[in-house]
Length: 124
Length: 108
Image (tube, rainbow over all chains, first blue to last red; front, side, top):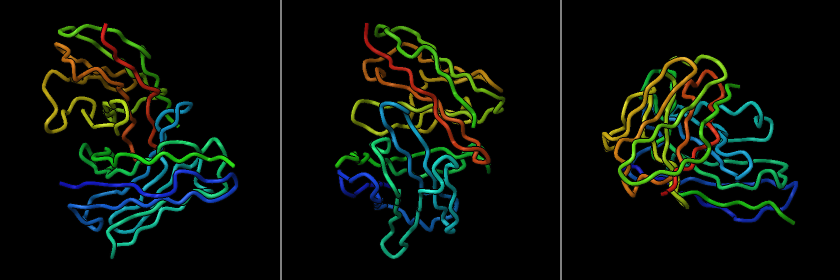
C-alpha cells in the first residue's frame, strides 16, 4: 500500500522560497503510469492543483502559478519536492502531495492516495 | 480554466436520508469528473471518477451521474461517517485540473 508523507518548514517569510518534500513508501516513484502531484488548500480558494512530476520525469504546472513553481524528484530517495518562490500571505495553505493516475482514460488524472498534509504559513 | 460550481454549499441532513450534491462545469467536460470526501483535519479521499465509477472500497450507497456540464453525487441512506465535505474535480489533464468549492454535509 503506497503511503505519502509531506515534510518541510511550517513557517516561511514573505518573498522567500517555500520548499516541501514528499516521501513515498510502499511503491516506487518510477512506477509507470503515475504522476506525483502537489495540491494545496486554503480557506479562501479551496483546493488548488499546483502540478506534477511523472514517473518519467516530465513536469506539468498550473498555468496560474507556473512561473513560481518547480517540482523535482530524487529517485534514489523515492521522494519528490516542491519549491514555490517569492511567497506572499496568499500562499499560506495546507500543502498535500498525492499520487495521480489515469484510471478513467489516458488523459485523466485522479488523485489517490494523498499525504496527510503540511500546513505552511507565510508570515514575517 | 474550467470552473466547477457546487450546490448547495451547505447541506443539513439526518442519518438514513438520501442526499444529492450537484456540480456544474463552465463548459462541457464529458465524463471527466471525480468526487472526493474530506473529513476535518484529513486529506481528501477519492470516491468516484469518470462521473460514475466507484473507487475500490467505497460503499455502494455512494453513486455519481452526469455528462457534459451537470453532475450529481448521491448518497443513499446516510451513515454517521458520511458527514464530511465533498468536492468535485475536473479530471482532464489537457486542461488545468480544477476543483469545486466544496459542499459541507452536516448532521441535522
